[in-house]
Image (tube, rainbow, N blue to C red; front, top):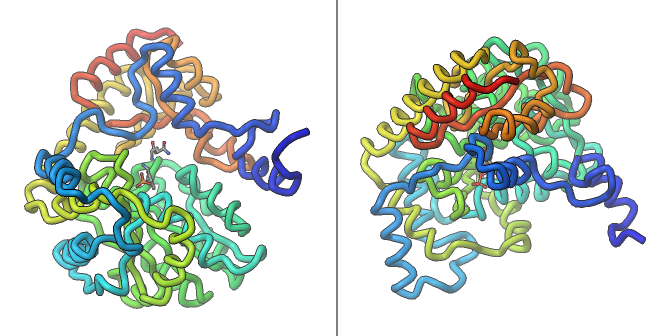
Length: 400
Ligand code: PMP
Ligand code: GLN
């Protein structure tokens, strides 16, 4: 007999959390990283950098450990990190955020998202609107919260949502509009028209906006504009981010949420029973990171943009049709011309055939919409330049 109760089994299977045999399905990132280790392929799958972040940030974590910051931090996070988050939001975006009542530190953006959904979903009829393809934890967290997922498609060539499709998806049942900008996996940065329409619809239908801005400092054309800075947005927006991408420390899992004090309090009530707290020695280090000079942030974006250029050129010469990203770690490329219209099969074969690992777009798309995204593959550009060049050589030499 299975140890997993029937009702939960059905929910988990529906959300793709269980394999058809009833086993825990590993995330696509874990599966593909394991394939890279097994085959010795270059891992352009899971989005983690292969170089450390700024020395000052690493040193601050070492110092914190040797100065005894090894016990539970306060539930909301260390006051100095809360202050650093508030300062950062003011310095980059002109926002005024009360560090005492309007911010909490979380175990990465992942916990921030899950705690937010668990806190704000009231009933099984509540809907969460997300843009599809979506980061894999979204559908899982919506299922855990017991809500319904409504998707708005992002399609090539530009991956911007159609405003009519967006308006049709938001109704009085919408509890949350969840916006990932810059977007994983497509690399799109939403236009100001799209952001304004999200705010208008949230007002019209009394929905809460939750943003996932983990790539906020990795935009290539223009500085990031948080949705909460739009007129009328702040009163109903929770803004989520994390230090993982900005400071190349994805394993530290220091994230945060800010927004209206009553919503933050609601999220805290859940968060305190998910992890309670995390990362005591990493919190002061991320505070150091958030206070780094402007040049650090602009250099990080410029370096990643250059890596995307190298990756994009390599993918084009290997025969992929490339969609250049406007932000974030990932480049999406169409493998149809290489016989990759079944991208899941194509990506499972790629480590053996080409010595490179990537993620099939199917991992970010709900079962009903798979056909619309066939042929698309996500490659991570957050790797050393010589690694990207070697991956490009291998892809060009492979026979698919
Ligand atoms: N949101 C998006 C869009 C991501 O790409 C990721 C992971 N890279 C996360 C959330 C998770 O962030 P964290 O590692 O801080 O939990
Ligand atoms: N966010 C990372 C990505 O999109 C993966 C994180 C994870 O493995 N859960 O690649």
